[in-house]
Amino acid sequence: MRLKDKVAIVTGASQGIGQVIATRLAEEGAKVVLAARTKANLEATAQKITDGGGTCLVLPTDITVESAVSQMVVDTLSAHGTIDILINNSGVAGEMGPLEEISLEGWEACFAVNVTGMFLCCKHVVPIMKEKRSGRIVNISSMTGKRPLANRSPYSASKMAVIGLTRTLAFEVGEYGVTVNTVCPGATEGERIRRVIANEAEALGISLEEAEKNFTGALGQLVESEDTASMCVYLCSEEGRHMTAQDINVTGGLCWY
Image 1 (cartoon, rainbow, N blue to C red):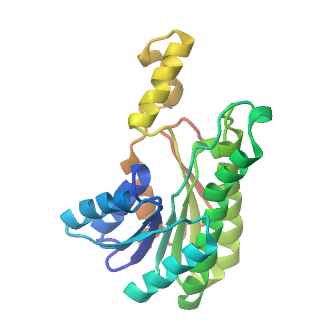
Image 2: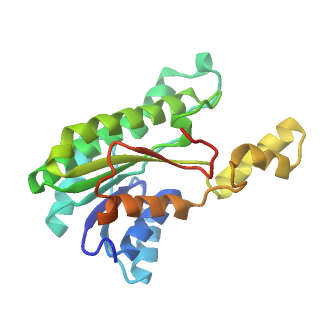
């Protein structure tokens, strides 16, 4: 197991990619701390982990509130004594529509989770990693942080901000043996993307198969959550010790820069 006895916080661990990342880290031997707003959904992730023989701690947390993030870190240290890994996966889609129709409240709400929440988690975990002179931070962005997505300005801007945060933090903490990277998933298989594809097919008057091609790259396939989780495991393992300040695409070739 590549992450045996490592203590890993995963935000947004209640569903989707975050749930799969948390489960994979546990399979690799990590003691996983599950953070998200909704306890019931976190319990579902916890059940998957414990059923597989893994270890986890459920900590319902609103990462947009600094006191809540601070308490999450305190509770993690109380339970495990340290923090080795931070996966910042929490994210929201934000308001959709032309920029001039986006409300200020919608813009700020998107940034509160996608950027400020990530900043707060890093702020409270980094001192622990610096003191022990080791650590792994992985921030989940999106290929939309690198390429245009019309009518999604809050989401796109926030995901690009994640890349800037990652690169800068990597150079602040590198001398302490801490790596910081971004993973940029592409269109990921699941109910959500299937709805998006169906809506696009209807809007353009084309078949589902034709619409799906707009969301797949060189491989002609949608990305799986497991692909993103595998990249996170690599970056958090000893194998990824010299990977830092990188924004890595997991898009099947849909984005290559």
